[in-house]
Length: 115
Image (cartoon, rainbow, N blue to C red; front, side, top):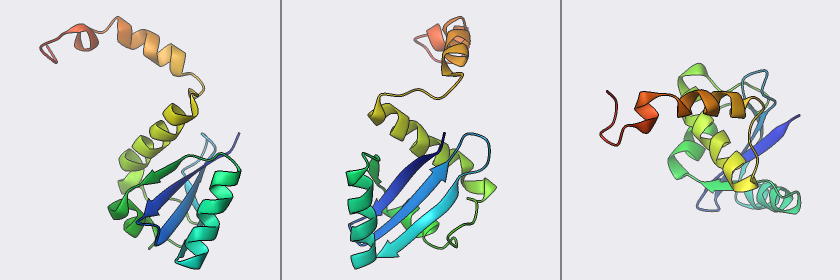
């Protein structure tokens, strides 16, 4: 299933990401001013989570539409995707299996941090 997430920069820049869980996230739309407002309005109509992150929006706006997000941004994009899942009340496929493994981890249970 495809999921699309948006980055917003002070309502001046909007960048849409699409992630299907199998390939790297792609830039599906981007724009500034009037086009940014259209992208945001479309996202709101479809219940797509919005996240304001001026720095990341500026970085992503440099990537051509249709291109995959470069590998050096994967961690930051993973945080955005996690945010979108969280605010949507959803969990990615297989999350329960990973979360169950973390419960048994001494790192997850230690109030002092990693041991």
